[in-house]
Amino acid sequence: MVVRRARWGRACAQGRGQPIRSSIVSGTSAATNAVAELLRVSPVADELAARFAQQGHRLYLVGGSVRDALLGRLGNDLDFTTDARPPEIMKIVTGWAEAIWDTGIAFGTVGAAKHGATCEITTFRADAYDRVSRNPEVRFGDSIEADLVRRDFTVNAMAIDLADRRFIDPHDGMGALARRNLDTPATPQESFADDPLRMLRAARFVSQLGFSCAPRVLDALAEMAEQITRITPERVQAELNKLICGAHAHQGVELLVDSGLAGHVLPEVPAMRLEIDEHHQHKDVYEHSLVVLDQAIDLETDGPDLVLRLAALLHDIGKPDTRRHVPGGGVSFHHHEVVGAKMVRKRLRALRYSKEVTEEVAKLVFLHLRFHGYGKGEWTDSAVRRYVTDAGELLPRLHKLVRADCTTRNRRKAGALQRTYDGLEERIARLAAEEDLARVRPDLDGNEIMRLLDLPPGPLVGKAWSYLKELRLDQGPLAHEDAVAALHVWARAQGLGVPAADQGEAAETDEVAAPGGEDQPG
Image 1 (cartoon, one colour):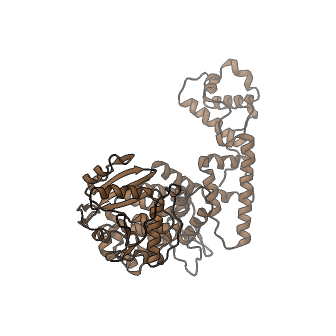
Image 2: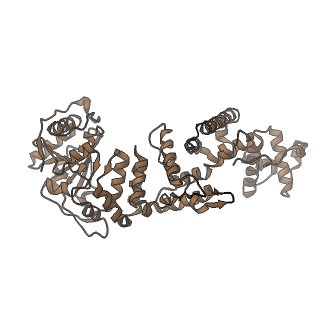
Image 3: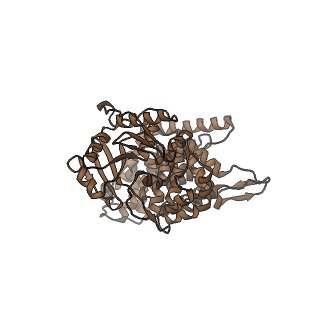
């Protein structure tokens, strides 16, 4: 076991809750810096350790908190482990913490909040697994060494003894961190058999931290990928979200696919690896989708956007099912956006995504090809209105997805596509300024429709409203008298009478065009 002593770093109010800035170096100096910096930014650890010591217990800062501090990304979520049992932990934090929760107490964890920090304090664990589910038979341990060896990766198996300021690193997590390498304290086979979710966590850490996996970990992932089916969809989704939103999502997805894990949790992605033969050459859809993901990430302006990233990764998943060879050596994927949207809904529902996320991703996939009917600007204003209205609140994301979907290496062609989309956005901005496109409504509301046609509330009012909305999209805003005239034309076509008092307003009805006469986008 590697145990290094370091000087106690006194807490300062200015550093509270702020991530440290330090580089990873090997040896005693790194351990010294780790302890000093961790405690400098975490006065909570000092206070909490003193309370545990008063009751005869030891407290350790552990796992992800130590790792993240060394990487310069420590936040306000702190993980501790201790020899104290859960009831004793509750007694120690009572009267000190500003809030306490015991939702994880059956697993030995007590949560507490203090000075803006969230602390999770867990009794040493020495669990046993049945290797059928991922739920362990909870057993409490008696030593920090036994606790650390059961953790998922060596970079998460480091601790700081807060009583005597020792840096504890029995599995060379510091070295692994310096190499940016993921390995397991026990053998990968033992670790993943105990909890298959750790395989997804490996891919997640690759995405979040830019790490690579040790060869023996890669071998175990490929060998044991099928065991991920022991994990509930909800837990799989939680890991996928963290992976997709990581700084290196491309590499995380590649590990999912190359290891075989994606075949069990997101099979539509590896299915995009279409063969390229000498007669029907075309882009590998999987590689194209990874580039689109990268380019979508580059266009983000306010942090990771899960919906945009999922849409970028999955926008072409309908291509394998719609792939057709055409005379002359080409390949077509007709209506792959329609098929893809259906596949997105099926997969995201299986992974227990919310209805909102599922529908937003599916809608982006459905709409991502619409722009390619724009040509060099041939759409009418009506078509532009429909593009905006169909996208709704997703329009900013659709802009980013469409731009990201340009992966051609021909700079002239890529530049032309971007300029064309610039032109479309300029037209949208102009129409939005003139017509308030964000809130396209018929020129007559439901109450006025009922008054003009002498109708009670019901389906006919909704049909009339929809008709007028279509007319509004086709022709833009209408003068009030033209909207009334159009309503009367529609009413007569439905066999409805027009109240005599309104006959005069319909004198020019034959001059009002029916909706749908202009071209549709896409």
